[in-house]
Length: 343
Image (cartoon, rainbow, N blue to C red; front, side):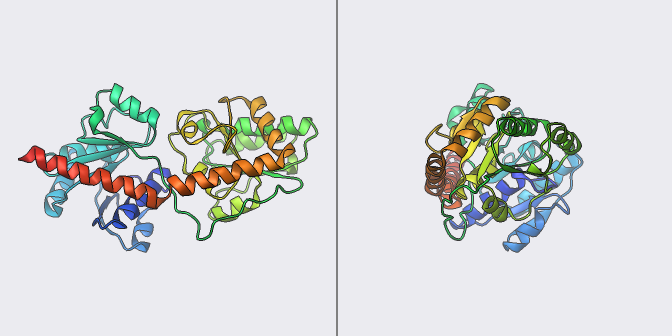
């Protein structure tokens, strides 16, 4: 994995490693020099090797990776993200089967890998339609570490605190979150709100909040390092992205037992049962978002029921332990098929 930052891609990279090690696999990591994920790997006691690359077409990096793979003699190589996939595909050829973990709807780089893992059903379908053999495409939804103790479902505060979190980029749809809050205020609904994160759109979002007259009703605390504290302090979580493959923050909101309103986009939709464990709203529809938030505020018992059902779903199906079972099965299948092809 050659991402330099510390976002969802990097978190999933670490999650896969933890899940596989827990089932007896020996995992060695190839990462970019000084990558922000390195301290996490060190803290977990993982072995890692730093190897540089200029871009996903760097032939010298491909040669260095191939030399490293020859020395490591792995049974399987797992590549996370388009850059790693593109560099490792030629490097791993005839050394070990490559499992490409596709983290976006751009599937072109993944096509041609020995096997592929899709994060959600929409992505799995895209991979097959683009030419990846269906029998070699697996689906593993993202996973989450459960908290040390199960968080109880709490009653809504008075006034309730409405929260959202993420990078301030166009696809996250935070302007719709702000517009929905303004609609609630115009309807006389009492609330407090928090929009956590940062990014290029920060000035525009703050200006929009000001122009909508939200004032002190909406806080912008910046990046959140203590997510447990963030979720403890809010009552309702809103996920407004117009496209996201499988957001970890959504799984976190569920596991912390928050009633959630989320956009009806492919990845999030797959984990939501509307009206049972969360509420869906049409993408980019601030009016519908406001209506669903108000529904939760006015029906606190209903909101608590959604939160409880969502928490059970995550703990039953989407923890690192559950995801590890899937990954272990996939890896063993890949190794077996790879051995058969070499005979």
